[in-house]
Length: 370
Image 1 (cartoon, rainbow, N blue to C red):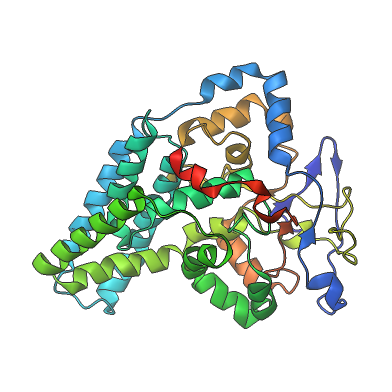
Image 2 (image 1 turned 90 degrees about the vertical axis):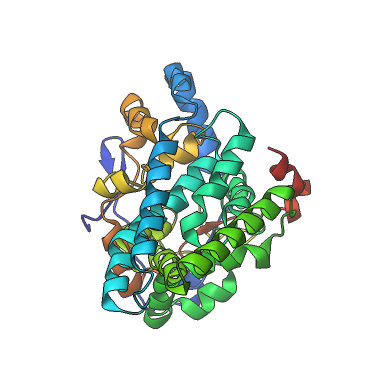
């Protein structure tokens, strides 16, 4: 078994045989379709029954805002420093990759924390601070992220409402070495553009403020510092969602990779795999890159308890090790990118998906009111 992925359950260890690259198309070229409920609601209930003290971990983390302010100021300072440096020069590229992409990945994930109202007590304050945090990204992003991310949590794996899932078009075109490399390089575009083709959300005053504030800041930056400074922001954003160590979390969180991948069968009544063989659909990473990404690697923990701030997620795992230690874990985000691109069995199809019900009778506009 590859040491990169562990799949344990209590005292037993299971090893799944991966299907060969030349397996029939119905085996490799389809998602893991299931009618089973997503696992996080049930595990949350079980943890709370056994460890009611976990409730004390929920709540916002006020010190996070100071770190975010520091990152924003760092990015603005570097952009000013590079105001006379061509964006495609080695100097600008290296700074954008080493510092800029790392910083903007932290900004993406700070906005993720803000989408769960984990920086301030009042939701409105979280929304407005997310618009400020958006500055180094260069394009308005924060207002749209929150409702789409809420859908991801509420309807994990739903073909209509979870826009984190790749579409059949993506999986068909990109499930080859060249396509997977393109996907890994351009992840940021897939995550930014895919949602609007799957599920539309209501445009609210928060979106308007996000757009106006970002456009105004970009205008002032170009006016006083020049296009090269804004180019540094854009380059940092692109690299943050490309072949960057921290970008490995995009694939690591929910893709079924390596030994966790098992053969699918023919799709019957909305499912092509039994409950017993269904692989995990969320994976945690406990390595050092969590220090740069607000512990987003604690992803099972986060989906189980989305209202526990990043500083408390390690404590959650410590309090309930019997629930988290047996789960499969990813040990390297860099490794994930490499395995995804180079291993034939790892394809864009490797996601757990549910048929769902068209909109579930759910009014998406309500998300913007929270």
